[in-house]
Length: 212
Image 1: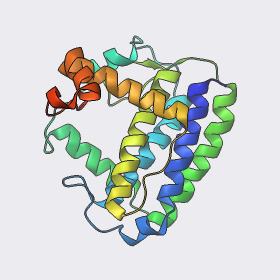
Image 2: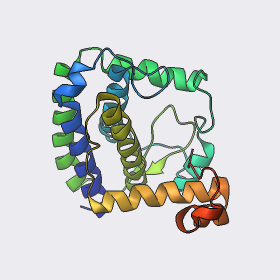
Image 3: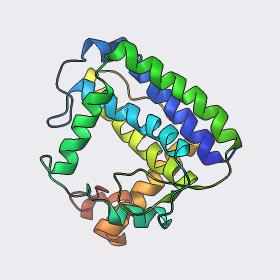
């Protein structure tokens, strides 16, 4: 199994542990730290990052062209979209749908999916995969997993902050992958000088180097 697959599974397990935390169940019907996203919907969106990998692997190998990971982020519609953009409304609605059975149903479902993926990723050769809502392109499997790792890391922090618990710790390899991806996206958005200054020269750092 590749390092990316091991790190994805470790990150997915950390997210699953968060979903099982009683603080999440206790805050289930409250607003989250994200605008217009309830805790339940955010938990569903976090779970989706794991569930969708199983769906992608169960689908036939896509016929759409395979693009590099950074090209994928150049094409996606959600970067820069407003909170009321149709795409973001759909994300919130889908998160709520996934979470509709409540925390007592969601956490075991995700736990079972991680166990299934641990076996499947150990034997699946590198192949193209895609998520239908992206658009007419695909990614290689390990790039998909890197993108889901980033989503898991970001949204686990969102959910932890929303319910008042510590953000789950991630394995070193996952941190390297996620921070590296976000840094490359930040450089593309803000330029290399801005990112370098943000990391090394606080006195002349830009106000933000957010990747999105």
